[in-house]
Image (tube, rainbow, N blue to C red; front, top):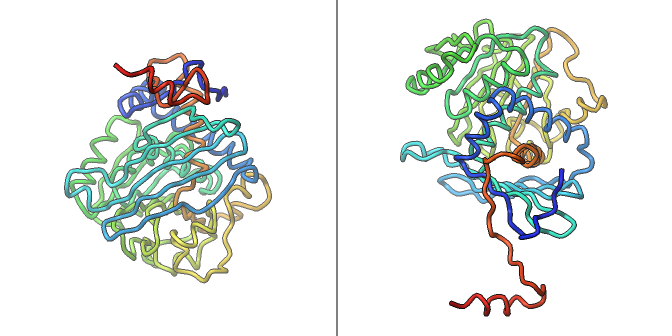
Length: 349
């Protein structure tokens, strides 16, 4: 990947409109699979990255976060918010944008929307992990929470794991109907369920993704039988959980970055020294994944900056030769780098 800025110091920018066009150009399932490949590749070189828990500014209304990382050659960050009440005002719960920069000179080399891209990379991460942890032959998923993530999660599991059926439940029946409608014709059997218990019937993969910023119990201990894979992606900040502590106690827990997950994930309910396995260790062969058919595996996912880095890297590598970006005049480019004021003077009308 060439990361040097162009001669005119223009920065490629991928808007929401162009991101959507790029998804349709590539195909949503091939793009989800491609993003998963990039994420897995970066997890396999985990030790090269700077890692820090996201920098969060919390309020009663929600949270605004910065998620930075670098592999020593490329720097990336994402700005993202999470405001559960936004949907009542017709706004997105989550919006985001991200940037890649050349570590060697500090110049940005890509600016992109990340509202759509975050949904794609979150689903790709879930499915990449499920590919390694879900029980063999898993083909049915319970999707608990039919909000903005539900369709992406379902299609990613189809593309990477071979999902055939998704059983949808949301406390809001309109959300369930929305997700079922959007997934029609996508090659999945879609079952709209009236209770979370009904959604769980026959499911080998259970995905929880709800928006309320509170301690909640979406899955009680008696709802979860042996041999399943739980993809818990709704907990993403202090004071927000979805699973009963008893479910956690019975599960083998896999995380992205423990220092962040212990603050924001389901495991904030457990003792600080409760054992967890980092997913990069499984991918690199340093730790086992699923070890038995009866085991409950739990991916306590809160999202991590390296996944955003991977997604931005994928976009950078796939916009070349397309019309799905525009060049932004984002960088001052005086003839003499020391004469920024002179450049300003010469621009006078």
